[in-house]
Image (cartoon, rainbow, N blue to C red; front, side, top):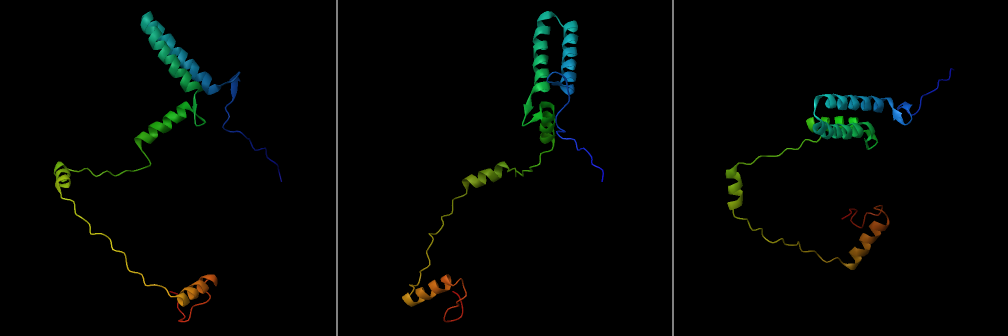
Length: 147
């Protein structure tokens, strides 16, 4: 039987420049190109503000991880959850008349609960019940029925 090498650590990305992976490198290049385009289009003060925003977003997308996932996967999962949540919650919408009727409706007073009267257990009956419990139900009692 031929032995095959099974690759391990499939979720580890290939590093190209130090600790930077190919995905991070491409994201940094795209962010840099956007900053260069902003430099060409905007005046200097607007370029500084927009460039810092693009730089912050680029660094977050390239290097941030949430729950061990890269930020872009987290963002895609978050958007997908917002569009199609797994938990379906039904909320009944009440009309104004129903709400008013519920507020005006008098509260019904419930009668007090009465406890059922217990019959006292005789000493002989108590020892019989204890015997049934001790034998795990094997002993059925004098009447042959567990109570």
